[in-house]
Amino acid sequence: MMRKNSVLIMLVFVAFGSITQASGQSRAVSSDQDMPQMSSKPPPPGFASRWDYVKSLTNERDILKAYRDGLINKDESILAMSRLGNAASLDTYGKVVDQSGQAIYGVKVQGFVKVGIGDSEEIDTETDAQGQFQFLGAHGQGLGIRLHKNGYEYGYKTPYQRPFDYLADPGNPLVITLWKLHGPEPMVHTSIHEYVPCDGSVICFDLLTGKKSPNGDLGVSVTRNPLNIVRGKPFNWSVTFEITNGGLQSITNLYPNEAPLAGYQSMVTYMFLTNAFQWSSTATPYLYFKSKDGKVFGRMNVEITADYQPPPTVFRADILANPAGSRNLEYDPKKRIKL
Image 1 (tube, rainbow, N blue to C red):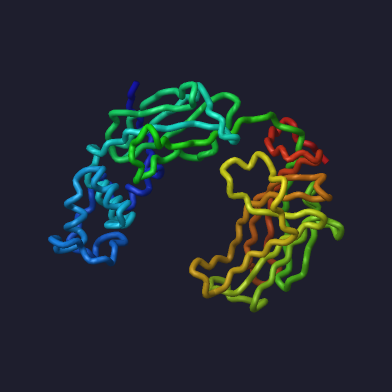
Image 2: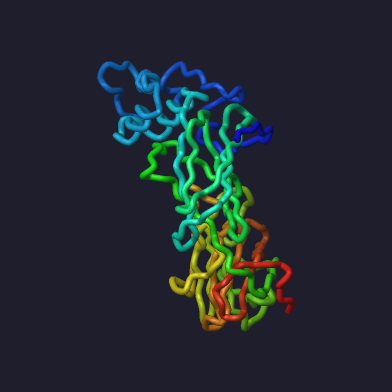
């Protein structure tokens, strides 16, 4: 079944949007200097420029082969694909699994085929007993995929994007993971909004109440050099988080619903030097933690804004903690523990 949508999904297809104008047509190019990140390699024999070579690639398989053979870079391949417009094949084979790698049957799969700016066509299907699905015969400028099944969590804020270099092959499906929910447990949800010095002094907080406490299990220290700064001008600074009788580690997985058993560090430091490629006056780590000798597991979104002048500067945290010693971090506000 296919139907029109009026919703804007340009952000889902940022790779294509970066090389198209608002009209949805390929950007006119007058010379190699106009190209986005064109390769510095000379063009293949018989071509006067890189652009001439890119224009010669007129079907999807030739483009992908040239990319995989190292003849064109990613931007050049995206540019070549954009020239195909709505003629590009979006055939896709996919498989849906849970966090343990088990196939999931009966997942509702929605495909959003981009056919113009703010315009898409929706194609629907479901996964079979092997968790597999397929979209065949679709053509357009990009494909977004959204999944739904009761009892499972879909963690993508926008539809999952079909990779630009995916080559349709039933033996090489796109694998998308859903989180099989085990059920929320009673948890503490608290927040911190406090000011901390910039001279390296450690300020401690209780992870269950969010309050300052000399015996708190979370220590935070900010070091700024120089101590007094000019706002808007880069400066060297660092922030350190430490947990007594526990540890922290960065959250990198899509579904932070279960705290890891191991891999924690008692102290983590983030440094921001003025000669760094991407300097910032703000740090926003997303961290798992365990504390009180493993009796509490949780996760927290942290924000340090280091450019308040004069000191102190601001520290914020949103904290979810399971005080029962369980690593389950599935949260239901109805089961919130109030301390």
